[in-house]
Length: 460
Image: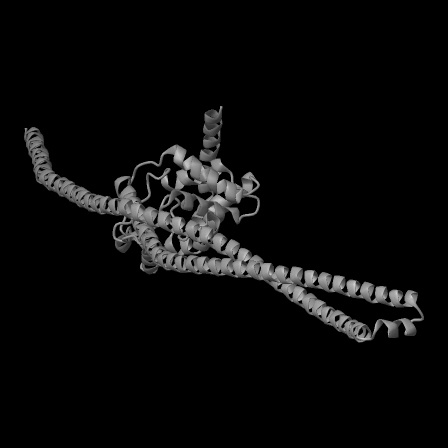
């Protein structure tokens, strides 16, 4: 009887204990549920606050972008106007230069013509002087004949007849005087005619010379006027070119600002969105053309690194990046004129240590997930290959190209050797410790094979 009562008592106590435990568990759950609800509510409020801040930043950036785009339209109009003015003035100056050149040629021709006329005048004057001498000589000869003739004619006819032994000699001498006299007079006439002709030529040449000199003076005046107009246009061109260059500089600054704002907006708005495959394919082909690295292989790395852009990071550099990397990141952002506070980086991972604490650092940038210090080592090469002033890790073309340059350093990658590609992918992740991360290369090549089939299908 006692044993039976003891069993009953034990059952009652056990039942009460189980009831107590259940009640305690229920009470614990009732207490935990409000705490969990509060935690979820706090997390939701935090996410809403983040979204609100994001929307506020987007709104501000859009306003800045709209302002920049309006400025670009105005500056383009101004720049286009001054470019037109510069082009017009340059064309006018070009025409003026040609006119001045032609005028100088014409003036030089006139100078040469005047010189030739002067030479002819001098030649004719010299000929006139010769004819004068000849004329004077003939006159002296004629004067001698006339003296002799007059002297003889003063003698009586009887004296002449006696001296000349009759009439025949007398008349012969008389005829000789007359013939000589006629010849001399004829020569004198010819000399006078030639002299007059030469003097007329000199007169005509002098008239031609005066006309040429007048024409040359007129051409010189025209040239002077052209040079004055040219000088005026050159001054205007110098002023206009200065304005055109000024507006061009302002335009380039506004365009750079617009590109920067567009990039920031795209990164903020599309954070966590997959990059359009066509865009990724285009960028991979661009990088492949410059480096020889296979397109599907590059897409495979991009897939593993950031899931084609889905995981470019939601971290903040001050919280998730190693302190050593932070000043390098700030420098990269400063050179690109980005705000480091809003540029996305990968969040800090949680690798459990022996004590169970989270360790590790994030801070990788852009689709190719470069760390700031690593990116600095590729900036110059990216600028050289793209022929751009700046290399941007958040720019898809630049990111994939940097990725291609990095893996191409492994021998065989540019020729498409599969083992080399596997090794290069492991090095891309782990550097010198790559042999412990062969799983990464396996995944990259798996995706690369899939992308190769996809590209072939789209090309068909």
